[in-house]
Length: 115
Length: 115
Image 1 (cartoon, rainbow over the protein chains, first blue to last red):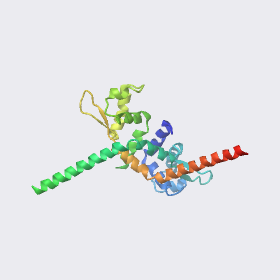
Image 2 (image 1 turned 90 degrees about the vertical axis):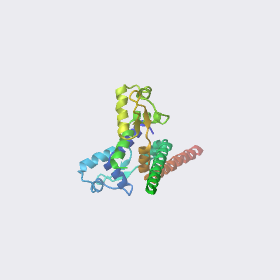
Image 3 (image 1 turned 45 degrees about the vertical axis):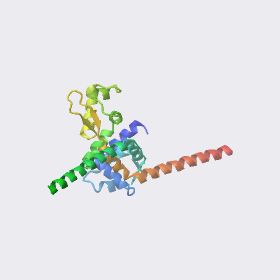
Image 4 (image 1 turned 30 degrees about the horizontal axis):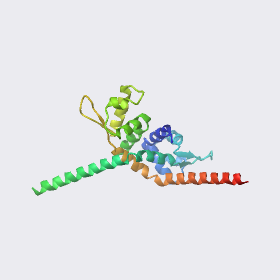
C-alpha cells in the first residue's frame, strides 16, 4: 500500500454519495442505473462518482458492455482501517475521557438534586 | 457523528502531509515551526494543512498566542474506523482470496519445479 493509494482511498470516502454507493454494493453487484435510483442525481453525475471509486480500486466494473455491473472491492478499505488502527489507543483514551466527563456531570446533577 | 463530519475526516486524511502531521502529534504536542521542520514546505503551507485538520476536529490549537501548540484529537479517527469496520468481512474475504491465489501460484511453481 503506497501513500498515493491511501490518498485515493480516503479521498474517495470523503463523499456521502460514494459511501452510500459502497454500502449498496456491500449487498451485491449493481448496474449504474440501479445505483443511481435512490439518488436525486443524473446518470453522468453517478458515473463520475463511480470513476473516482474505480480509480481508488474500491469497485470493479464488469466487462459486459450492456450492463457493466459494479462490484465492491474492499481491500483498500482494509488498508485504510489498518492505517487508522495505529491511532486506536488515542481515540479510546478520548472516548474514556468523554465517559469520565459525562459521569462526573451526571454525579454533579444527582448531587445538586439531593441539595 | 454526522455524514458531514465523516466527509471532513476522510478528506483531511487524504493528504500525506496531513497524515504525517497526525503521526508526529501522536508522539506529543508541537508548535507549527516544529511541525514544519521535517517538510520542505513553507510555514503558510503547513498552516493551511493545520486549518484543515482543525476544522475536521483532528487537532486542537493551544490558546498561548506565542506558541499555539497543536495537539492530536483522535475521536474523529475512531468514528472513521467504526464506519470502515462495517466492511471488515468484505476486506477479510478479499485478503483470503489473495492468500489462496498466492498459495496456488506457489504450489504451481513447485509442481513445475518437480517436472
